[in-house]
Length: 383
Image 1 (cartoon, rainbow, N blue to C red):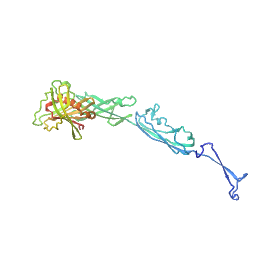
Image 2 (cartoon, rainbow, N blue to C red):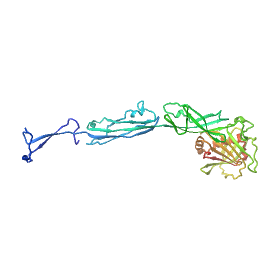
Image 3 (cartoon, one colour):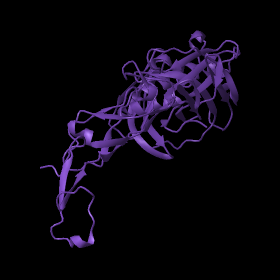
Image 4 (cartoon, helix red, strand yellow):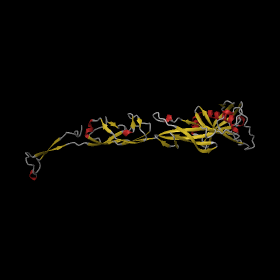
């Protein structure tokens, strides 16, 4: 049972008997007719405190809070309570289904739906909703012959990452000169240049970018006399680096096949992808596993050919740099998209990527299959 009665009009009669007192030592009020007097007692409310947790979320994501109480007495239990947070101090809109703008909002909590709450003085329940900017992440690839005719490609789509179907106007300009006909990218959001990591409105924009120019006057590896229109990368070529014969770059891949070892390089460690039978023709390169295990090549590096191009596999598109040193063919990611593509392709030994890169090497860099001793796929991006 309850220890006290409810707060309110519940008055308790208390009779104090003076029977056992030394009455000669006391004087009673005039008009008292007996040796007793009456006194009243009442029940005052107990203090009940609501503890409500703060909320931190990002723009576009509604998160709710929870509460508990401290101070229940008399056997009362926190069952059937209904905590009301209103619209969280304006943090949430449209029936608490949509966030307001990035800011910190203060709100209070009310408590109802328990009959015994009339016996308490209720305090507390103050808390905050902190709405942080929503992160938007993308990569910008730019290609062209000069800085005045660049075509930009953005992945993933920016608007698709925004909340509530919102839209921003995004455009791009060249950034720092990185050398070798490559430049960084500066993104402009709604006309304002944004440094990666900057907050604009309710969003934080995280991005990278790389512009690769292909000058009209191509270097030797860019020349394919059979079909020069298919070239869309940039390259450089250094000859006579050793006494080994250098095949003429005017030669292109013909029907040929050879067995080559393929390797994975990550954090300076080389592991074996396997040995593949490589079949090359002007349209494509095919790789078939042989079950053999050829060792790493140990041939002199007699030349240097470098070529940068966007390669596409079923896992996506990325910018890669391909280097031929007179013996080995090296494939290295230039941007984050390329690195992500490689990691997805790693489960299948990056066979598709290697085939695409070798085709560019044969058809656009002037490399011959018979001059290759091994292929290396590097998982560390170029500096």
